[in-house]
Length: 241
Image 1 (cartoon, rainbow, N blue to C red):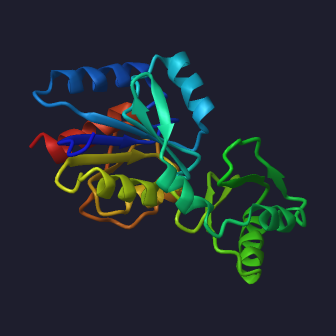
Image 2 (cartoon, rainbow, N blue to C red):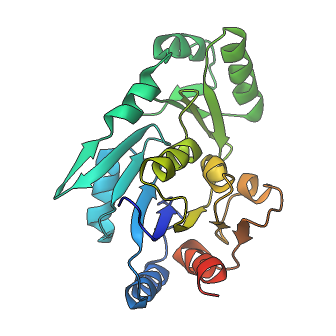
C-alpha cells in the first residue's frame, strides 16, 4: 500500500454496492487497466457488518477498511485485518461518550443506533429541530465532537478528529499517497467531508440532497450514473484522459 500509484476510496452502501451489474462493469474495467488499483472501503458500517456485506455481495477484499464513519481503521495483513493503533489513540483522546449519551437521553426524538464502534455515538432522529438542538447542547456542554446529520434521520457524534475525510487524509500521509491517482466516492451526507478534502472525488448520480448541495468545485465530479456506474464515470473523468 505504501506509495500506491492508483487508489479508490469508496463508501459502500448505495455507492460501491447497490447495482450489481454496474459493479461488475467497474471491476472489469479496473482489471483491464495496465496498473493496479488499491482499494479502501470508507463506510459508516462497523467492521463486522462490512465483512457480512462482503460475503453477501461477493465484494473484493479492501487493502484498508475504514469503518464506523472514519473512527476505526484496519489494515489488511494476509487474511486478517489489523487495527491501526495510532489512529485509535487519536480517536480516544478527549472522547466523552458517557456525557454525550446523558445529553441524548434528554430528547424523546433520539433513539440510539445498535452500533458497536467505541469511538462513535450514533442515533436515529425524528426531525431537524431535534438534531439541531442536540448539537447545540453538546457544544454548550463543552464537549469536543464532530456532528454529522445525514439522510434526515441519522446523527453521528464522532471524536473531533474523526470522520471519513480526516481518515482519508491520515492514510494519504501515512502511506505516502500524495502523488497517487486517487478517487473518493460517496452518496450521502456522511461522505461530505471525504469528498471535500481536495482530492479527485465523485458524487454518484443517486446521491442524497444534502450531498448534492455541496458547492461546485473542480475536484468534485457529479456523475449522471448511480452507484458503481457513477464511480466508473468519475474514474474515467479524472484518470482516463
